[in-house]
Figure 1 (cartoon, one colour):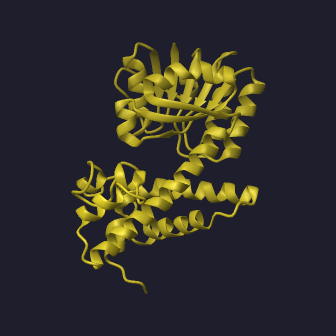
Figure 2 (cartoon, rainbow, N blue to C red):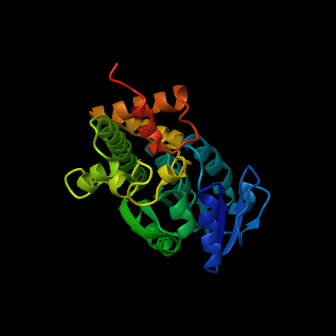
Length: 290
């Protein structure tokens, strides 16, 4: 396929490189001038979208997605497919889908889970919203860039799934970090804490696959000084999207709201920006109840 990829950052660049390595003709553009292995750089987002069968975007937020979509949709050929892998608000995803469909194109909103390692290794999970026909077009590319793709429903459903998933992740990571900090003060060794919780009712992805305690469990950012696999400011963004969505549909999400407050405090006031979201553990280690 002829693919245009817009947004070659930490996630987009390895995703585009994997598509090129699989034999697709991939051109790419990023406002920062970054490139990706095997991807032909072009001078603009419009150039990346022109005469392409598929256009994939990986962008920071809904406002930027709307702006880019407004530029590229008129340049895309009729019948092309727009796949947005950004994590944005549901309204932006649906607005872009409406715009593209009006122009005669298929669209999929397909945010990802798996972080930078998953993007590089081609092991991402895609949560997709859009028509069955659009998902069928995108599926072979998801198979290259990831290990699993779930068709969640119509336009916006992929973003809804991502927002709900990451609200769970943010809240469970905070609880996991709290538990380790409490275990420390109770004199319980971290390895013993992990051995119990990881094989009993404390089991979770935050505990078992991404343990925030250095030297405990599988390799994670905690073992690399909390250099980000998933940065705290990105978790803050996603939790903000979850609460924006909750307000829009009048959903009661007190744990999500509290997780948002804690990550905002961590990122904005406590030096958490640029650190992995699991760096909540050293935060709790130094704090008392007051």
